[in-house]
Image 1 (tube, rainbow, N blue to C red):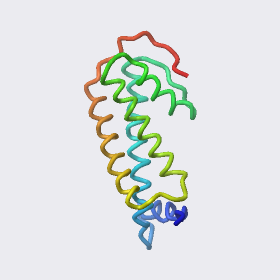
Image 2: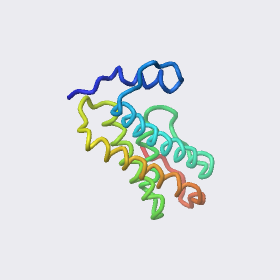
Image 3: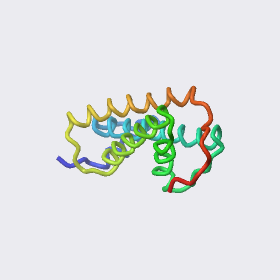
Image 4: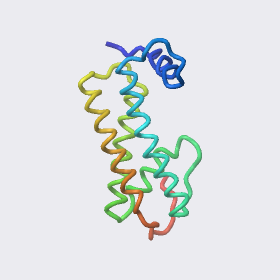
Length: 138
């Protein structure tokens, strides 16, 4: 069955305490996947900019760019962050754009998104500045 995208509006109302009808479980799971991705992506982007003193585009290209900057490292932890970000980005794409998403698959994907998001956030906490020369990973 195709997802009813208006469920996100109900969820938005619920989140700000204005909804009189709860959003569907599917809307909540899709939103959880998306939020897990953005928590990891923005934290990784900020690490590149603030800790590594690297540059990241401020437009839509940043999503791919952040992944590539981590994946192109020679450091094992950075590569793992890049791979996790890439997986999360794929999950978010499905959650935000696909009309159908098998419910069991959606539940597993949401759990995976939390796992990969947590991994990125935990690894970033103690990740030292990059020792590699700065380069554009477009």
